[in-house]
Image 1 (spheres, rainbow, N blue to C red):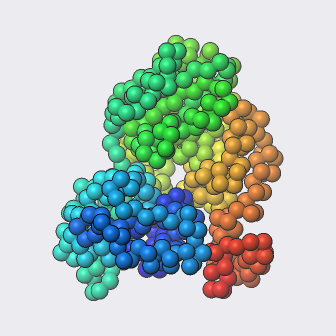
Image 2 (cartoon, helix red, strand yellow):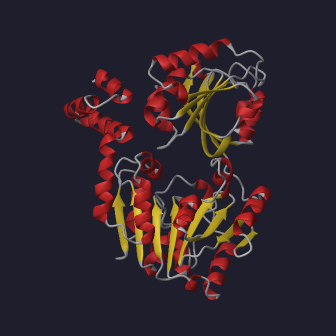
Image 3 (tube, rainbow, N blue to C red):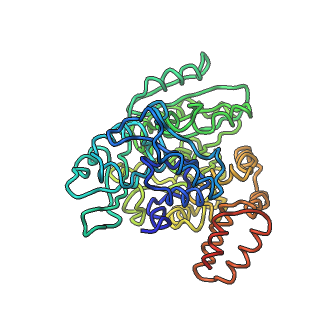
Length: 451
């Protein structure tokens, strides 16, 4: 398979880090950087899963080759000790463990370098025992077969973490709550309330695995942003990909409503993205009249209502009934529901179409992908957009005026160019000339050469 096809198979619209184990995927690393502008990590592991005392011969040539292709040396990192292992978004293990080397020596990487959203591309040779070994860590999808079927190129998808209790999070949360706030946890979920002098409350939703493993500050979704505004915050945390479908969570929102917690505030906003976006809309039902701000939300994962949703099998067996079940219906009691989404992501668009109440403001961000928040951040416009959405002043006109910044955003330029190249090559050429006349865009330069 061509590098572009392998990257397509990952099903990821945003990738911040690409790690190559053993140096077998330089072309793929180049393609990944060209698509996502991601960090490239060279993991110098030997055949026994150990870090050599002297840098392996392949590292210098690999690094120099990337730089010769125009990569900024600051985007390239070499991991040459156990301390450098951390979760990465995409890991390539080609022509290495499971092929030439014993798969068991890759165990430290599987245990320390995968987060909930990671994906791994791996070569598996027949008789290596790799498939049974990997079964304990996740699932595999065969993408291609080579050498008469003896070698298979495989996509590995890690198991989502089960809801867990993290003692470190408990310690952090209790410190953040202080004497005036509160922290409650049960059944792999938790609520953290951080009071401030403002009469505005922002309710956020996050995955504990991401907060603790992907953010250096180890804080809930939106914490620093909300803190800067002086707003109070209630953070609901899920210890895994649960979509908050846990009776204790529902009961806590009922209790907060019945005790008049939300009534203390002049303005309450429920805010989240993806799974958190679902929860923001769904649990807004505990505070009728609140505002909702959701980025790329799901409406429900009830298979009877959204049989076309294929991404989140881990939650298919959860109960999406009850008063907080169908976010598209429950959020009808909100004052306003502001949804940011990419209409060209068909599954996201399908969910957003179900939000049909008159209180819904749908803001389209074409070609920004499911994780469009990351793209808006890179463009420098996420903060004013979210600030306006949370304080209730954002209009469609404001949003689309700011979104014009995408014209100079390399990722948007690339996505637009690639779509044009498939059906309208002359339009793609005109776009390519326009972009390259204003600066370098490696992906479009290569696309123009191909045209």
